[in-house]
Length: 114
Length: 114
Image (cartoon, rainbow over all chains, first blue to last red; front, side, top):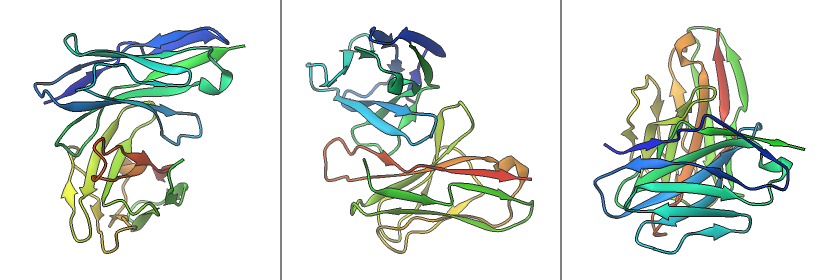
């Protein structure tokens, strides 16, 4: 069974600074997708960024980028120029290429200090 | 932002009542999902559907039931609510025709059973 581990229950970052959230996963599949979701206090889950495992290039979306290390089964999220609106719970998630379900990590609470 | 809606957003109800949580999406997605999330915890899949008249149980055992009579509608029903059902319920949908099959989430229903 696939598992996703987020080892940082909470992280803090100063406004305008950069922060990296860690995620590791375990799978025997070779083809899969990885996601970072953001869940602000209003609790609507929003997709931040996604990565196809077959792509070597790391995904980027504006201030958000990932460091995808397939051999190490690592998928960290970097947030540059942090903003107050980035404060939320961040979930790393895995889905097999032919699967239906998302496997979620336990989440990391990100606090942004002004 | 994804066009997926859930009602009610908040529900407080007494033990033994029958409840239905509504989920609708206007994106024409074939796949729909229900997740259960306790506060500050990861999400667990409880039901999913490939399309009309298709429903499957997820990994987390749940006493709830679902139906899929229309593509856009995926309601979840609890025949007799109990305090152990207190949780947040998140609905999601995805388009299998897109290679990433990314899931988009509704705002959630926070259920409290007294």
